[in-house]
Amino acid sequence: MIRTTISILLVALINVQCTAQKKQKITIGFYNVENLFDTLDTPNKQDQEFLPASIKNWNSDRYWTKIDHINKVIKALNKPIILGMCEVENKAVVQDIVDRGELKDNYSVLHYESLDARGIDNALIYNQSVLTLLDSGILRFNMPQGSTPSRDILWGKFTHESDTLFAMINHWPSRRGGQVESEPKRLIAATTAKKFIDSLLGANKHSEIIFMGDLNDHPDNLSAEMISSVLKPMINPESGLFGGSHNYRGEWGVLDHIMVSKGFLKKGGISAVKKSGKIVSEEFMIDEYKGNKVPYRTYGGKKYLNGYSDHFPVIIEVSY
Image 1 (cartoon, rainbow, N blue to C red):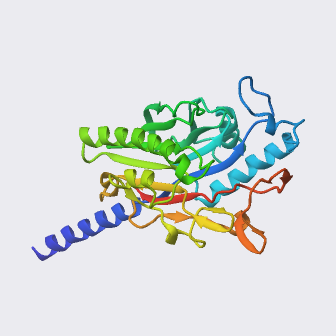
Image 2 (cartoon, rainbow, N blue to C red):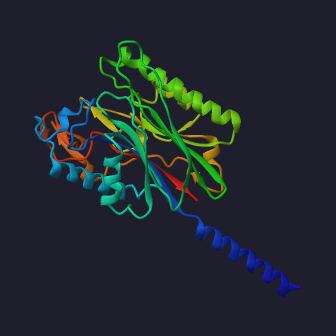
């Protein structure tokens, strides 16, 4: 009887150890890659600033350096199973990221063309050996009369074993003209995003949702608070070394957000790790401007700096 009890305990212990060994830590992230344009003149798009004959002299060498830089960042993020991106011109430039680096055997691209006048869109890449894409689409919203169209919200529906995960990629209207004057545009985007989230949670209160993007608003602004009223913010000023993901005129702020549903914070299956949000600022991503540490960007005005982006990427840890 004693031997039987010991045998049962040993089997249970082995099962627990095996389960623990199977549990892996990975990441999901978002990165504003800052003006990832190809070198071709696209009809009906205002991409003249990023052409070989432009004042910025955007050429193939600089383009491929930018692609290599983004791949260096992705590696530093521990190759997220989902990486949302904004400020990409088209699907081809995102495919170049995948094909040029260490991702080409496992990663796929999700992208839709938006109506943005400059031709910049949202996109995501995902690890197809971990996730299966079931469905995808965009949420398009109308700007006030006289305003140019904004970037669509991109969404994808994925499965991992018995879990279903919704990912939303955002790049809301800029602060051009001032925060107060431009805020109504971001509130339109926030209303559209929240309606979609509410519909998912209304259908299933345990829905697993990850919302990410450059909202061009801080956590305490109304638009971001609309989303944080239904999802859990994972990025805050304490998530990074500098108090933000972006620096504007010497002031740091959190413009790049990741928020998740309660269903994605559950235990078991694929789930977000609580309090794991991080603004990533590796040394190679940092530059110095007027004595201050800032993100190492590609251009400073018209001057080519050979950097990475004017934003730091943000990530969360995920276990599965």
